[in-house]
Length: 362
Ligand code: KG4
Ligand code: ZN
Image (cartoon, rainbow, N blue to C red; front, side, top):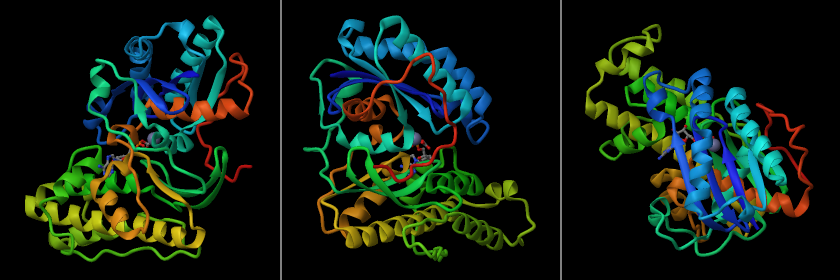
């Protein structure tokens, strides 16, 4: 079964064709990072308008790269929740229209759950398509029960999957998501947006032990809280530059030199990653899953991968980094498993849901 997956929930317009939730046929991602960089974060209005400009070309390119015409496509899967309302509307409207015109079943997909399904893609169609040529995939699909650490710009979740569509949310962030903390800390120390990759890069030259930053203690050991860590870093930077807590954060970057910047990046990254790994290790001990996966933009972090592999007594196969940040392949992959269990929706009726957390399912 070949599914066209469409993603537009935030600042990437993306489409892919995936066969049987496993074989990647095409991979097209048009990112808006360069547009939002100048504002230091995603501007929702601008994001929606940019999606409108590229959604049709992106979908067409995904079909062309896959060597498919509409007769070859069995269904369409599209992100309907959660995300920015204007951005979600563009992708869902395109998907609804195409489902009506081409008479294809339409499956609405939860973006955060879909991130996990990047790990179920184990093959690519052998072709001359450039965008696929440098990806290397896990050797096999994860097994159940599967523990998933989902870490993105908006979510930090620990989820136990007993099967496809059958999961329990063990913990989630109580305030900032870990990706959000990377982005905000990058801004404080004067590194470019998005903060995750810039902090990871700067941290390579820094001393991760230079600053001691706090880790939140929470009643539910699987819950996360990163806002205190971010504030503690801000206070440390203010102190280090000879100022108190009233000093405006936007004036801090010009007071730091590259050595300080690298040390702050490394110390913050170490603390954030230790927190993620500690909690994942605890959930692993408590629930004894047969596989562990990481998902979402922060899963692209090499140091997180290294630390997790070191600490957990299980072999973890990581998805290619390109599949960790937002893309259409993960939407199409989850779409396949949803299509096994659920009826398609009426394309005239599909609504977006900007706020919808992952909760317990059956
Ligand atoms: O999953 P994603 O592409 O979008 C959301 O659904 O939020 O995740 C984006 C987040 C951003 O916060 C970005 O800074 C972070 O993922 N990120 C990283 C890395 N690459 C992206 N964080 C840490 N290390 C990275 N290498
Ligand atoms: Zn995402």
